[in-house]
Image (cartoon, rainbow, N blue to C red; front, side, top):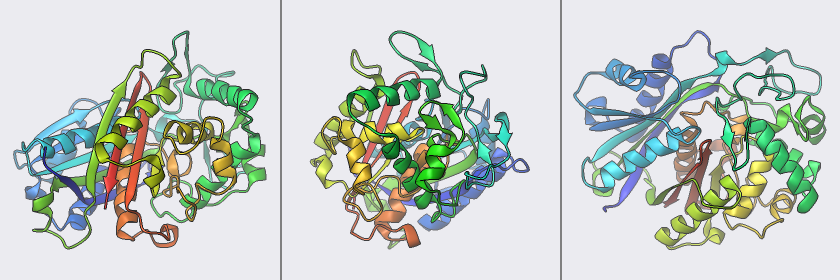
Length: 394
C-alpha cells in the first residue's frame, strides 16, 4: 500500500436550499475542491459518491455535469457513515495503485423532509429543524435511519436519550455538561461560513429549548439538512505536481461493523480507534483535532471515552473543563459538528475531512486551532452498525 494524501477540498454550505438541486450543490463543492487542489476535472480518474437520497445514479448526474471523461463512478451508501465510506473507497483505490487521483464526494438534500418550526425566544437560530419527537410522531428520524439494538428497534433520538439517561445515572454526566457540548458546537459553527447554524447559544438557551426526548432538547440534536462536500486524494508523489500546499497523509483507515457484544456504537468506536492508532503508530494523547459524530450531545461525551481520550465516566468532565474547546488540549468538532454545522448525511463524513485539511494548513480563520495540528482523527457511525475512522498526519 502506498502513501495517500488529501490534496484539496470544497463544500457547499449546509442548510436549507429548496431552490437548489443536488447537481447545483454537488458541482459547486467539486469545483471548489478542484480549485483547492490546483486540478481540473479531467485529472480525476475515479469518483466515489456517498449518499442516501438522490436515487439511481445520482452521483453520476453530478459528475456528468462536470464533464463526461470516462472516469469510474461508484455510489456508496452506509447510513450516516456514507461519506466516510466513500472517502475510504477513494483512499483504497489510490493506496492499492489502481488510480493516482480520486474524488470522494457526498451529496444529500434531506431538509425538505423535515418539519420546520418558527423560532422561539430562547433559540438563537433563524429556524429550528426538528428531529421527530418519538412520543408524538411516527415519521422517519432526523437522519432517516432506525437504530437496531440487541433488544429492540427505536428512533435514534430515543436511543441516545435513553443512553444519556443511563450515563447521567451511572457516570454522573450532568445536563449542564450535555448543554456545554451544544454551546461549544454553536460557538464553533458561528465561526464557520459553511455551517448551517451560525449563531452562538448560551447554556440556558441550550438546556431550556423545546424538549424532544428527555434530556435532549432541540439544541441537543442535529438538524437534517441539504449540503455537499468533496475531497480529492492522490498518491503522495503525485501531489507535488499540482500544489505546494501541505497535503496531509492518510495514516490509517478503518471500518468496523456489528460487534459481537458491548454497547453498539461505543464498542465499534473503541475497536476501530484502537486499530487505527496501531496502524498509525500513535496514541489518543497525540490527537490535536477530532471531528466526530455528534448527532446528539451525549455522543461527544461517550465517544471521547471510547476513543481513549479519558477514562470511562470522565467524558463530561473533559467538556466541562474546556479540554475539547478550540484552544483546549483535544479540540473536538471545530467545524461545529453535526449539531451546528449540520448533518446532510452523505456529505457529513467528507466535510469532516475538509475541516481537518484546512486546520492542518492553518486556513480556518477565526476558528483556527492555535497550536500545530500534527495528527487528526475523523469518526462517523451509522445506523445498522458501522463505525468508520480515518487518521491523518501532517
